[in-house]
Amino acid sequence: MIWGSWGAIIFETTSSPDKLTSTQQYRLVAHALINRYPSHEFMGEDEHSTIMSWTLNSRYCDPDSIYGQLSDAASIGTYAPLVIGGKQVGQFAIREIKKDLLNTSPEGHTRVIKLTVNLVEVRP
Image (cartoon, rainbow, N blue to C red; front, side, top):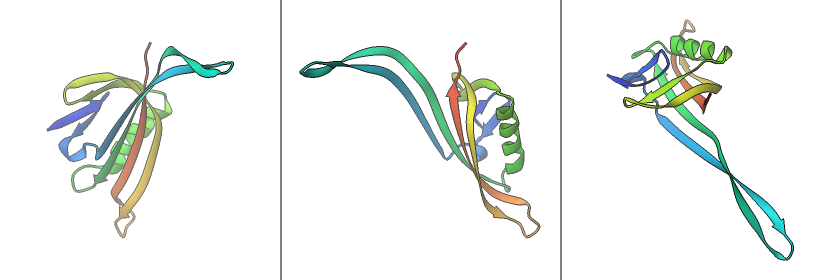
């Protein structure tokens, strides 16, 4: 069952994120006033970012393949639609990938990794 996708990379139920955090920031600029509380001015939206974390187990998927696909896309600045539950959230690019190797076989093959990917919305 498909949980969501980022571009051509599909997240099935067995490879869906353990955690998803979305942040939307806005710019409010303070203006100092003599002997008064600062005045604030709304300057618009700031970046929208999403952080997804996965624990990928070789019993259900190929952790190295998923990491490789994400790493390759990040290294060339790919931005693609992020779809969650059938709804397109926006166009996102990878800002950061963190990989924690949790378990390997005696031969050194990856069994379990934890990936944390920081995506930022890209608007034309």
